[in-house]
Length: 112
Image 1 (cartoon, rainbow, N blue to C red):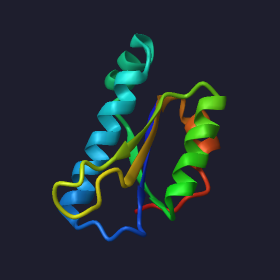
Image 2 (image 1 turned 135 degrees about the horizontal axis):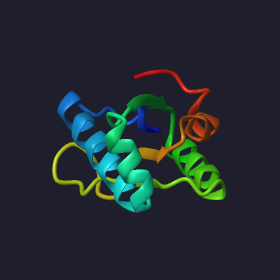
Image 3 (image 1 turned 90 degrees about the vertical axis):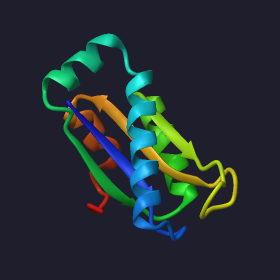
Image 4 (image 1 turned 120 degrees about the vertical axis):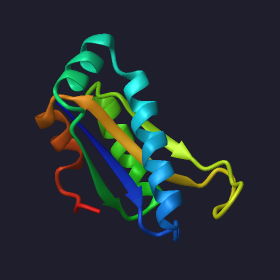
């Protein structure tokens, strides 16, 4: 079991903002998973990777692919209280799901 979080590199988030957006994405996608996937992921150490995303469009495309494969995922939009404009898409979490399924969606991306 694995979760991949894709964070945008093109919006200029500071390290703290990036960490918060990744955390939002991880929890949001976890909450969309069924109980069995949640339990298996938690028992397996909550494996996750953070990957580089190039654009809002890319995150939407990856979300659509995950949806088509039945993989829980969550797109995160910033509230706009600090560094970014309200509604800016910042991150996408894919999974938790079987590692090979997550890799079919995000396997070509580079580690952050």
